[in-house]
Length: 203
Length: 329
Image (tube, chains in turn yellow, green):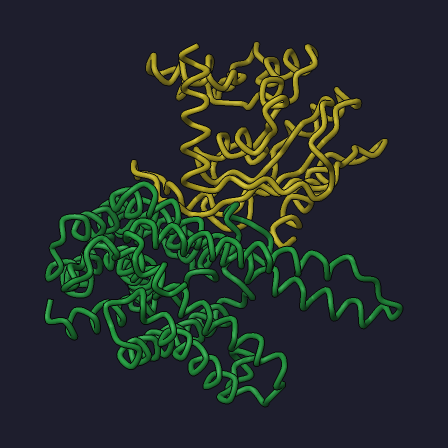
């Protein structure tokens, strides 16, 4: 109940601050298993995509959050687990654990996921090179539809180190789905995916 | 008819006015809709007509939007009207600053602009501190904000960034706040009718803009500054202002003025409004955008709100301070 209210509050806040406009260019919002991947510039990115999705898809679409940061305080933990229902991943790589394990589990259950393949927040206008996770998941779950997304302007809302957000209009542009070609090289695929995200900047 | 209206109470008069205006708008909307049904044999002709209709529909939508805002404001009292205008300011400024991106170093100044300057300005209006309200932004805010930006330690494009921010504040907060401020003036012998003054200003400016727009299409004269506006030319500008001023003189009955004075005030408001709109066009060209709502697509949900109110933002302060000076309030 409280989580639901918090969700609506955040949704209202995001709409007020950013207008949170979803622009579906390459594909309509659809209830199929999807992997959304986007550029990452701000903490608010997660909330932006989450707010851009229609309500009925929001529940089955889960973002990925770093376990060490987002479970540090009880409030952060509650926010990410109860409100956003995120998938926690650990940032430190230990020998016996595959960092993709929680994602594979979620995809195996049929959830859609939101992935930021740069791994960390970027500072430049263009996203950094994508990490291998997207490729591995695409190879493992060929039925999941890969949807590129470009999040515009969010870095102006809340730059790193600031606490009070500023109202600036933002939008999320969703592009045409991508497919992993049979036998496609990992690097080639990741570059193609990155270019698909960048191409959405100008539509 | 005239005496019947004259003998109504101010509230009834305002009510009658809104009925009239809503009726006119409805008629305009229906007419525009009936044009969309018509078929054309020639495809390019049809495309031309459709483009014209789209721009006319835009104007009708603006008028609806503004009339509904005023109607709500009038129904709910001054405080609600002020809040509504504050919201319009907020969304307009959000639009302005989205399309004139600032740098990280401006973050704190932006926070101040949205969450301190805007509420304080509207509070000053509500509290009727007119002297403070007139100088708060141009004197105090314009000196304070660059300091906050400078403290962020980023000299790059410093002057440009501050100019953007201060223009946004000047147009969207300062200019806009003068519209509801009209509700607060105590004109001699003109009690409880201030809603008429707001209505008068908005109607006159809107009539000027519409006439100018239609004349621009009809006359097809050489534009004064084609790089900025392909439609702005002096003859249609003059016609727009004259028609609106005559219209203002005809509305003198709802103002505290005689027709001659009403004509003069309409003239001043239209001069400021239409030229202000032209200036905002120059700002848009600089950003390489056709309208504040991205390419006609609604980014805000409100869809180019600033396009709808920019003339008013320029007309209101000039009108307000002229009226204050004229009555020595």
